[in-house]
Length: 331
Ligand SMILES: Nc1ncnc2c1ncn2[C@@H]1O[C@H](COP(=O)(O)OP(=O)(O)O)[C@@H](O)[C@H]1O
Ligand SMILES: [Mg+2]
Image (cartoon, rainbow, N blue to C red; front, side):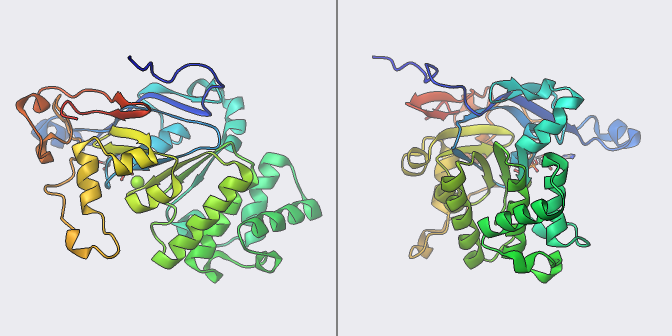
């Protein structure tokens, strides 16, 4: 019997991303354009996914695959070329400027490098407090009390209120960035490589904190990482991006244990595993920069399973198993 796609019943997903497209013109000046023609990077090319309330979606892929651009489009930090983003059923790309303030509160970013995302001239109380004043109108003692609460939620305390970013370790700074993100009680957190700049031991602590906050506060997250081990640890579902497109998406266990796409399989083969150093095999070829790409699959040039048809046309992700989509004619 045919399974019908999982569209029936229930509340809408907290986040629905539909066919997002963003190209960058990198032709350079008029002279370069004349010499080399128009050069377009198809950074995000038809990306769709849902994130249910309380769920964490891991968005995984090598550098340049379009992960950050996707997040910026969702938060409206970049204008889309086409596509839609729905938050709790509301089309946020069509939100008016007056709705934008509410939106800024509802979607919060945590960036890779907390040092550049925290104002070096502000004390912790001000960094977190400013968000509280803008979005909740809190001032004075009430505000300070709430800042302390937020600091405690991320494993810091009142003794850190007066300190400047440079007085903290990298891990502590990222805790402050998380506290600031939580200050507006957002419904969605976009975390873009939030632990990638930290030492491995500190990474584990910050990841554990995010997991704990998730359970306690029911956070919904899009967690961007190039590291499959990190994605596996934090995600309920994983979407694998390559060259601006989603290659595979499914429940974390399905993607990690029963990958369908040759790219996912290659990534899994190359990931360093404790106790298996001998199994580390580099993925052959360079990651595709989607610069004026042809109509074929973006991964075709590196794919061990490539057949002639792969370079002629690419297929969108289709459901192969329940809740497990793959964009590959060989899968
Ligand atoms: N503002 C920009 N101008 C031109 N190209 C860009 C810009 N932002 C991103 N790109 C290009 O788009 C592609 C995807 O980038 P990005 O979304 O940052 O990937 P990721 O976060 O997965 O590393 C890359 O080829 C990158 O060079
Ligand atoms: Mg990025």
